[in-house]
Image 1 (cartoon, rainbow, N blue to C red):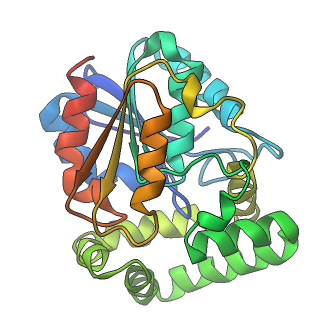
Image 2: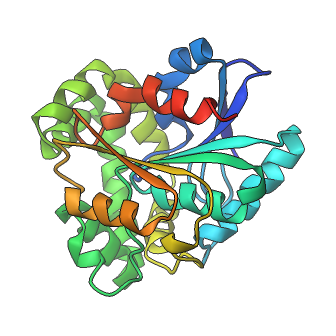
Length: 271
């Protein structure tokens, strides 16, 4: 398992679950904020992404087992959890499977369980396409992601700006401010096309638990200009999680980039 480690070594640990088409580097922009807040951010690559070995057929709870082994190896006992976009379900999985060592979970622009009837149809067009092609024709999907990876490496800034335009003006401004970080993150996230295919296949499998089964406190965060995740989606997720709070603020799908301080402060206060 590959992972990034930001912030003070003796800080309260927050485990980051990265988004789709991404990797361990997606939280790097938060490193200075984490350091100021006394938070140590540990951000693992999921299997088949970046530096982590593949694990075909994996589930949300399989990743929780991986993270538990990493925490044991690092000697970390108590954690907060942060998950953005596709990472939201993995953050929920840590809160469920590692409830005894998790103080609080933050889900930013997260999805409902996609194995539930009609859920995939509610995804944004890009995620719906990537999910369906990965499930129905993995070899074709692998070629698609390989092409995206080549484009991101050969014309990185143009690729990032095309991506930004697809998610709206609010996110475009954010992307411009972290363009170099986004280019490196996306290039690394797409480095192993078959791993990206499995990432999309995995997130459409049953979680192994329901949102209603979470017992730890959960903050659900959403930006009011998010064009990829509708308000109804996150409102339903927050309603179904027993000890949850829905937080709506200014921003788009890259909401966390604008609100890392609030999010990390909320996770660290109970540490």
